[in-house]
Amino acid sequence: MAEKESALTTKDTKVHEGQTTKNMRTLRALLISICICIALCAAVFGQSRQDADLIVSGGIIVTMDGARTILHDGSVAIKGDAIVAVGPRPEIDGKYKGTQTIDARGRLVLPGFINGHTHVPMTLFRGLHDDVTLNDWLYKYIFPAEAKNVNEEFVRWGTKLAAAEQIRAGVTTFADMYYFEDTIAEETAKATGGRRTAIKKIKKTELSKLARQAPDLPGWVCAPDRSMLARDCIPPPRPGFAHARAIPGR
Image (cartoon, rainbow, N blue to C red):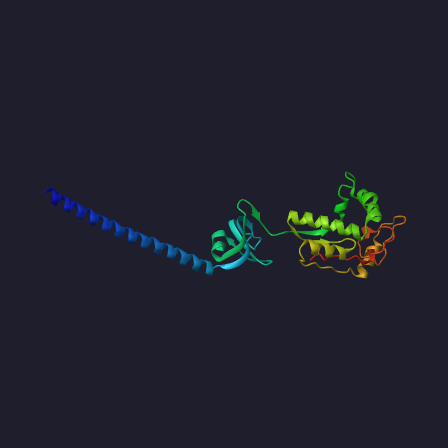
């Protein structure tokens, strides 16, 4: 009797072990199939997405479109120097894969600022004198300082400083009116990696009109061939001043 029971137990154990082995094989095959599916889906998904150099992801996007749309969880895809797409983050993530991604969660993402009227080299005159009227500030301090200090090297270094400050503040475009505008354009191009700069001569008819409006100050002149505003008249121009240019406002 004991021998018969032992034989039945052994048989049941073998059956149980066989069933366990079969279940393990089935589970292993199922896991392998799932892994293959995931890999294939990832490959297909990756191939369907377009390449982008940079994706700014998850920020509050101020689009400045016609409807002034603001995306509270948006992304921007950039390729080269062009914005190729702006939209909700899931949508952009589904369409583009970026070589680099910036996590912009909790930050504003908006177009660059435009400064429509600048004299960028004058950053070097910052703090020259405070708490006086504009007229005193110009005629008693700024104009004499310009007459004494402004030359091409001054303009070059002032532009370098102004470019760095504007880039840091998010200013991407500025319209400048000062001396040695060729030098300002050159330094701006260097600072922005060769981005576009434009310079334009002011017509002599405009200069003559401005010259007639010049203040009558002893020893101060505004030569008609100087491409500067009348209020910038200083003692007779030094070499290089006649070559100033102005970047058009638009």
